[in-house]
Image (cartoon, rainbow, N blue to C red; front, top):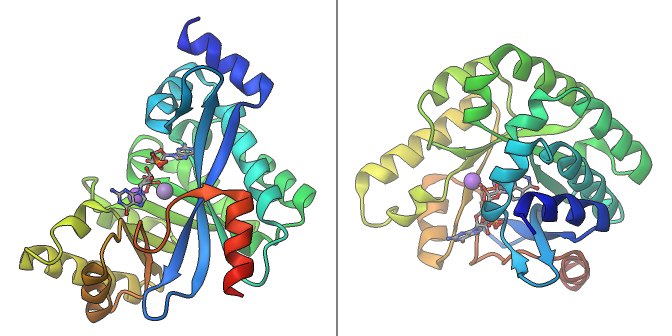
Length: 250
Ligand code: G
Ligand code: G
Ligand code: MN
Ligand code: NA
C-alpha cells in the first residue's frame, strides 16, 4: 500500500498515539508539564516517527483531521492531571491555515474539561512567514479562549524579532541546536543570554529544549534560564507512564 493510503487507514483505525515529554524547572527538577509528540504505531512497520509521515500528512491535507485527533486526545489524556501541569501540543502550518482550528480547540476543551490555561499550542516561525494576517487572527482567537501559544524551535528561522513584536507569545522554546554548543562556544552563550533577556522583557516564559546533560542545565541556570525539556529531564513516554511519573513525584 502507498503511504498515503496507509495514512488514511491509520487515521480511520486509530493507529496513532501520543508520547509525552516532561518539561521541568531546572533548579529543582519540579515537573511543569509535558509536550505531546505524535507516534504512528504501524501494524507492520512498527513505531513510525513523525518526521516520516507529517510532511505527507501536510501535503495531502490529512494533517487537519489528524491534528484534530491530536488536540482531542491530548486534552482528554491530560484533563485529569493535577494542579497546574501544562499540556503542549504541536500545530502544523496547514492547521493554522484551515478553517475551524479555534472551534476544534474550544470543542476539545469543553469535551475534556481541561482548563484552557493548561493547554499550550506550539507554532513555528515558518508558519508566521507564510500566513501573516491569517496566523495573527487564529493565534489571537486561540489566546482569547485562554489557551497559551508558544513559539517553538526559536532561533532557527530568519526573522524572529519581527514576530516577537507582532505576536504576544506566552512562551519561547529555544531550539535544541543551541544546547549542543552551549559549553564550547561563548557566542552561543551570548545568544542564549540575549534570548532570555528578550523573554524577560516581553513577559514570556523561556524553555530550553534538548537538555541532555547536567552541565548544560547548570550553564542554563547560570544564564537565568529556569525551564528545560530534554533527555536529562525525561524521555517522551505514553500517557499511562506520564500519569505514573506525576503520581510518583507528587
Ligand atoms: O520526537 P520527535 O521525533 O517526536 O518529533 C519530531 C518532529 O515532529 C518535531 O518537530 C515535532 O514538533 C513534530 N511533531 C511531533 N508531534 C507532532 C504533532 O502532533 N503535530 C505536528 N504538526 N508536529 C508534531
Ligand atoms: O520541534 P519540536 O521541538 O517539537 O521537536 C521535539 C523533538 O525533539 C522530538 O523529536 C523529540 O523526540 C526531540 N527531543 C526531545 N528531547 C531531546 C533531547 O534531549 N535531545 C535530542 N537530540 N532530541 C530531543
Ligand atoms: Mn514542539
Ligand atoms: Na523545538
